[in-house]
Image 1 (cartoon, one colour):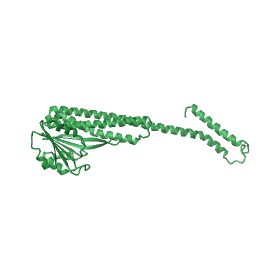
Image 2: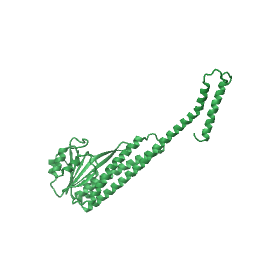
Image 3: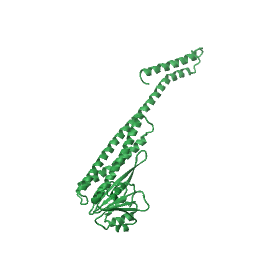
Image 4: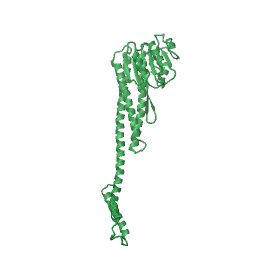
Length: 336
C-alpha cells in the first residue's frame, strides 16, 4: 500500500547502462521493455523509477529483480525512516532528499529508496528533483570513476550526493539563524516567536532524518556484505562521517536558536517591564492628585477655601507642587 502523496500520473523509468567502454541512457515505458534491456551481465544498470504510487509497476520490477516483499513495502511507504537492510541477492538503503522552500527554510522531504544487486542499482523516487543529474552526466561522458567500478560504488555516489545536499540546507539554516539573531539584538519587530518556532521544528525534522541515516551508513561499514567491496566500504565510512558532522552542526544550531529564543523572550519581558514601570510611575503620581480632588469634591457646606478668592489657584499650585516633588524624587531614585 502506497503511503504519501501522488506525485506523477504516469510512471517514469529511466535506464542508464554502462561499463568502462560505453554508457547510454534509455527511457522505457514498461517493465517488459526493461526486462529486454538487462541481458548483458557485463554492464551495470541504473534503473531510476519516478513515482511511488504506481504499485503495479513497482511490483513487476520487484518480481523481475527478485526483490523481497518487505523491501517493496518500505519503498512505497514515504514515512519510512532511513534504514539499511541486507538480503540474499541485494542490499536495501532508504533515505530522504531535502529541498528548502520559503524564507523560513521550510524543508520538503522526499523518499528515496535504493536497491543494489550484483550488476544493477534501482532508485525509487517520489518525484524527479534533478539531484542526480551531475552523476548521470559524468557517467555518460566517462568522467566518473563508477564506469570502472562495481554497482556498490554507484550507490556510494548517490548517497554521497544526497548527504552533500544536506550541507546546502544546513548552510541556509545557518544564515537564517544568524539573521534572526541580529534582528533580535537590534530590536527588529519583524522576527516573532512563531518564526523562531518554525525554524526550531525544522531542526527537529532534520535530526529525525540524520540520526537514523547515520546509523544506517555506519551499519554498512560494520556488517559483512558480499555486495559491498572493502574499497567501497571506505567511501561509505566517509559519508557516515559527513552525516555525523551534519548532526553535530544541526544540534549546535538548535542550541544557538534556543539561546536566541531566550534573548527574544528576555527582550520582550524587558520591554514589558519598562512599560509597566512608566504606568506605575504615572499611577503613583496621580494617586495624591486623586486624593486632593476627592477632598475638595466633598459636599460639606462650610469649606474654608470655597469662598476664598484664590482658592482655585491654590488648588492647582498644590497639585503641581505635589506632581513636581514626586517627579524629582523618582528621578533621584533612578526609577524613571
